[in-house]
Image 1 (spheres, rainbow, N blue to C red):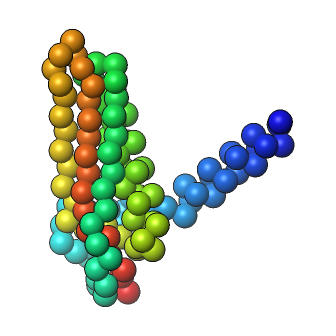
Image 2 (image 1 turned 135 degrees about the vertical axis):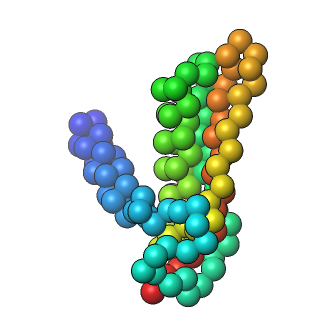
Length: 110
C-alpha cells in the first residue's frame, strides 16, 4: 500500500513538472521573445469551490482552474497559452459555489 502511495505521489510530481510553465500563460496575443508557429486550438480550465464566497475560496477556485488549463494545454503538446480570458461566477444563494472558468488559445512556439 505504501509503495502504491509513493508511486502515485511521484507520478503527480512528474505530471506537474511537465505542465506549461506559468510564465507561458498570458492574456496577451503573444509572449515577448517567443513566436507562435502553430495554433493548436482552444483550451479551458474550470475550478469550483463549494463552501461560500471568500477570498480564500475564490483563490482556490482560480488555482484549480489554472491547473486544469495547464493540463489541457499540455495534452495538446502546447508550449504556451495566449489570449486568456477569465470569468468568475457565484450563485449568491447562501454564499453558494464559486466557479472560475479560464479559456485561452494553445500554441506551439519557437
